[in-house]
Amino acid sequence: MSARETGKQRAARIPLDYFKSPDRLVRVKGVLTIAALVTAGAWAASGLLFSSQGEKQYSHGPLAAVHATWEENCEACHVPFSPISGGHWLSSAGGGRTPADARCEACHAGPPHHPNQKPGDVESCASCHRDHQGRNASLVAVPDQHCTNCHADLAAHTTNGKPTFHPSVTRFAVGSHPEFKGRAEGQRGQLKFNHTLHLTSGLNVSWQLKHIRNPAERERFRQQQPTGKTADTDFVQLDCASCHQLDAKGEYFLPITYDNQCKACHPLTFDERLPNVSIPHGLQPAAVRTFLWGAYVERAVQEPPTQQRILRPLPAPELREEEDKVRKAAGGQVSAAEAFLFKQAVTEKELYIYSGKTTCGECHHYESKPGQRIPERIVPPAVPNVWFEHARFSHSAHRAVSCQECHARTPQSTTADDVLLPGIADCFRCHAPLQRGADGSMQGGARFQCTECHRYHHGQPGGARGAKSPGPIEQFLSGTLSRKLPVPGK
Image 1 (cartoon, rainbow, N blue to C red):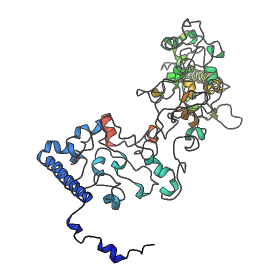
Image 2 (cartoon, rainbow, N blue to C red):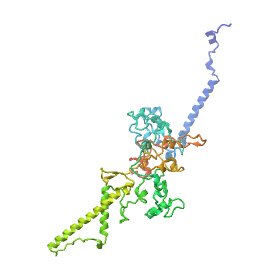
Image 3 (cartoon, rainbow, N blue to C red):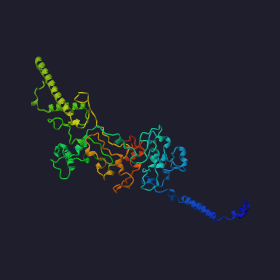
Image 4 (cartoon, rainbow, N blue to C red):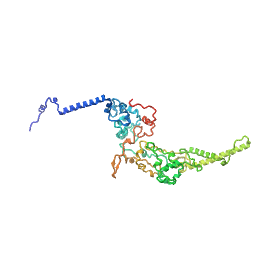
């Protein structure tokens, strides 16, 4: 067995001038370093020498179409020598905010996301809205991660540790997202309504087109009748579109009103002797009584004098004192009699209007004291114009499916207590990852990111609808901005 080599023997094998003759690896690294420096210098020099091309060289890509006007004006959004994204280490001292945010907010001013959020959770504009991704890129379609960073554990991101909404939302799926608020709370109005009855041909009361008195309304319903069922003697056949009409944007349905949807079939008439007189909708019982008094007084005034039982005395200076007293007494009795007759008619019609399901009782609830036959107040329907206030929705985007696809219980609904709103399970059938179902068919595939339904800059999650103070950009687009918008970057 040979003796082990000592350290001195190993050192003797290393040439003392090895550093004077670099090996191949060292030479390659040196060449690459010099090439990188030359390339970077040439790139920087070309940007300085050719200013028209310099901005394009340093840009990550074309701006989105909404910002294309400032394609050649980088200073409109960028602050020199300052990061634009709050994720940069230089911006961490400012709580995620950057100087460039002021230039974004010159056009896109908006309230805080939520008054209960921690100040340190506020990020810069560019942290979520990444531009230079191409002309057709969307600046609001941000990844879900920007939402779930806080919403996965809202207690840790609120000032008092008590989240207003669901404490944990990780993605849009059953079990990972709370049930829609309006559906979970059984949100409903105070209107009596029976969908089953209204969707039945003839409405179960042999209601025919000829029963609709207004000619214009009759023709409107005639156009909605099934093919070959447009004669005046055909039963009325309503469908969802007969009452629910989309707004100009095609997103939400217009509010249901008596004049637009109900009046044609439910006139507020109260006396066969006054067929063309109907009670104005929206009156409370006190105003209804005043209207009835006026209607009967006007009818009495319009009657020919021959139909008057007793004529009131006219003042005549030549009448004797005794005769004048008699005529005045008779006139007072006539007035009392007329008041009694009007009062009786008004009382009878009030009982008719509020009894059972006639007129007001067909749709409204009453507030009255025990044993009182005439209510003190008619309860307003209070039907929400928008049922899901914390989300965005477009009915036009769902026009490829029938109403019953999402509102399946509507044809069987007989009371307003039925919750007909779709739930998260109904939406998740389409708004989910594309996959093959148990029957072999493809399911899902529609987009399901948070930003499909929710927005951020509106004070409350999804609460942009009905905002009392829209930002300058909304006012600019609607033509209601009265002051001049600031120039970006100035």
